[in-house]
Amino acid sequence: MRALILADEFFASRERAMLERLEVGLADEGVRVIHAIPDSLRDQPPGGVYSRVITYPSKLPRFMRGLVAGRLAKELEQLDDEEGTGDLDLIHAFGGGAWDIGVELAKDLDALLVLEVWRAGMIDRARSIPRVAGRPPLLMAPDPAIERKLIASGGEATVRLATWGVHASDPPRRIMGAGRAPSAMMVGTGRDAPAFAAALQGLAMASRVRPDMLIFCDALAARRAGLWSLARKLGLLDRFSLIGEIESRRDLLIQGDLLIQPDAHGEQRSTLLEAMAAGLVVVAREDPMSSILQDGVTARLVSRGTPADWAATLEALLTDIPGAQALGGRAHEFVRVNRRASVQVRAVLAAYEWRLGGVPG
Image 1: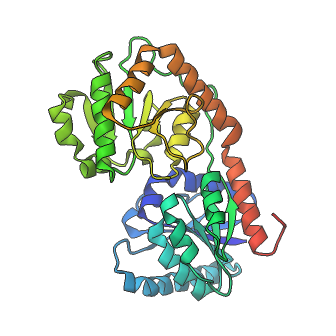
Image 2 (image 1 turned 90 degrees about the horizontal axis):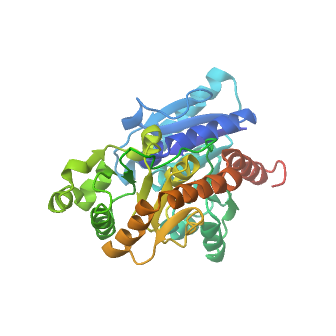
Image 3 (image 1 turned 45 degrees about the horizontal axis):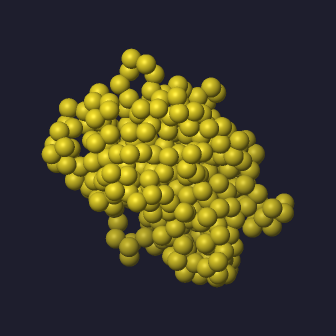
């Protein structure tokens, strides 16, 4: 089997580690993987160990996507000739920015189109895509909540569940150790500016019990939400740092103690799984479309999302370090048992084989 993993800029950068795990797992099962990523990321491609990487223009108007797909099709056919392999079987598109190219490419190559529906806001769009190369697309749901909503929405496309997974460290890190300043890592898109502002205000209020607490935030999210000026008003600038694409820097991210996610828009993020797997405490808004967020089991959830709600939740964690460490341990165990990377790979491969007419899924 030959598969193209087609990722948009967001996925190729923020979810690079997940794409690499998927590639390695599929390669172990005999799948030949090729990556297609935006040319803006050519210097930091995912994979490369088992796969070939090709690029496409990162900035292009919608009407040119068919031309880009045609060029990619020729490049893939050239790879076939060079390597003596068979035709491409499927295109698995990650990120809405890659879907249109994936549709055109699947038409050109007569390949199965697979769409990763990674957030609830993409469900209507996914259901509106007609048959491609004579077949309805295969919709992959990374969370049971999204799977249920996709099925309930009807349509001809088929739906399969493949929950995202990670490798859990063993044992997990011991967070909030004695003699060390606690640190909070803020992740998310920043498009919900009021939600990010409320979380930062809550952090400022909670820092009354730990004035040494350090706060790190994704630079793009902070810029979108206007957090730098807010941090100045809150007197946090000496403890507030911006980090470019913090979600792609997993080695740094898991050195924190608390992972703060103010967004609640049904988005799946392997960052949260990585944090849980490392024993961090995830503090997030309630999100019914994310089954990994379970209050008191995998995370501490903030219901109303006001600054006072954030402050109360964070203060409780900062003043009960054994309790916070125990919560981090429960999250680690949940991921170790329920969200293993190997399970994701097996589910994805079973879905591929099922739709291509191979082994029943």
